[in-house]
Length: 298
Image (cartoon, rainbow, N blue to C red):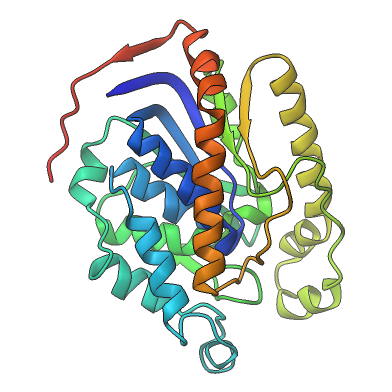
């Protein structure tokens, strides 16, 4: 297996993460690994499978969600205040039919970072140490908890939720690691501009006790657009290699049509495959790659 002294940065995007799942399965097939993976929102779930070397796990999760009528439903939102059935995803799937191999995850030499957002301060909190499988799944669940569509999670005394609110593309911890090479997987096409939210009135009502979080929700489009400008500069300087859809993905962040999810997965896999030659040159030009003997218990 070839491991590079480079980082992998994964954008969230809800069910659009099916595209990212395809990209990462291509990396599995080519045995490409990175020293650090940063993730947020749905990419925390997808990235954990990659670090655990569980090729195909993400695809199984996507298909199970698409085939289960209760996995995403208005009924969930009314009865449990969550559009996604988080118990189904993080209890049943992640421990049973698509169980995360926590031993393999823990034994991986790749450092895995999950971004969350502190409701009190509105600031990002990054996590990189996981004492147990339950601990890891709790943080992934928190990072996937979308405002309005899911409740927040209290972790070690701090109320946290969707990491994509404070940094949708978690480039900060990747840059701060000191690495000179960043491979970035986006779920938005080039030229995408995020627009201001129309739900300010609702955010002010639901999160009235969290003014910093409300301000963040109101201005997150500015943060996102500024981040894409930063990434463009990194790409021009040869510091970043970006894999992203060539056209807008034909699916929403709450998509559950299994055929559409399959199409996004294939699109991601093919995009990574088409970019492979350029990616190899980008990574190998760093002169920082090395072979290693994998030592992961199953």
